Image 1 (spheres, rainbow, N blue to C red):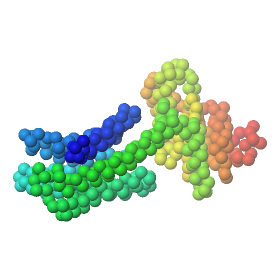
Image 2: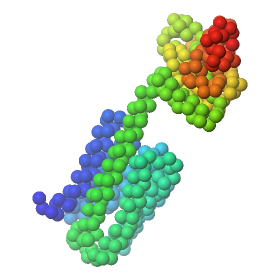
Image 3: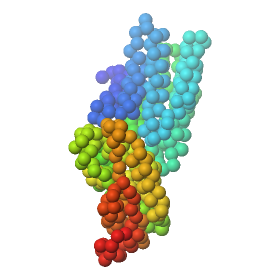
Image 4: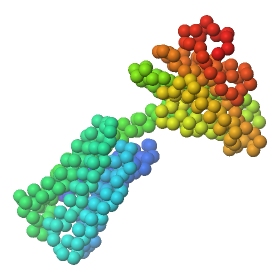
Length: 396
């Protein structure tokens, strides 16, 4: 293969492979982020191809579309990199650098033709976008290893667009015209450095996407699909970790167990679809009331648990009463206007280094006694862990 043709196809081939890869990942696990990466790399591929394979009769349109494709691709990939790490893309900054770069490019192409300043216009804009992304990644408090790698690569890529462009033009001389542009020192170094850095960046992105997808799959495995809170396994894992953290810092922890009253009757009278909506409604109330610190889970058919770090028995009781009152007085979609769903609660506060099993056992006993006393109520456990079995027959 001719070396010129090889160099012409190197970067667009890499970009098209990456675009196809992210598109394939999107088909496996649809996410707008993956489409953004795919579209961004497709745009950069188009930009490279138009540099070489635009007919002379369409030279003006080809150069403008090529520049616009590069700009759009870089901006979209940059925004997706920021979004991948849970931050809002800096849309104003991306738009400012993109429009400024394109405006300067058009000025030095259409109004005051100057090939060197056209090169500077786009490269400085792309460098600014990379440094903007690096600033966003640097602001992340707890960086993952992939985030640190991407931060380093975006800094290097930003310097590549700015420093390498200036140095290559100064040392190799400015391109003398459109014909000589493809063989200039600037363009050859651009092709090689973008191929290398582009591959490294893409590998880091794929690693970050893969880790994010694995985390999502694990989250799905630990989440109850109906209630959208943790399932029993997920709750027990998260609760055990929270108890360990509380033990190290000697902080209080309380557990609230809840059971929907006469749930079988609801299913029998109004259908299982209505019963599902009752579960979803109650779980949503638990999740909202628990906030960011609480750990809520559906541990059985109509059984729920909430672990409340930094809460003592009194605070946990207020939590349970608030949820009970709101749930019993509110209407549930799918039930008749006169129908009301209620729940019963058992509350226990951790004593000493009590484990999750012991805490749940005491809260469950309090819940059982609340059911015996008429349901739609909150019962507290005042027993200490070491007396659970000795005093099992005595009311809490």
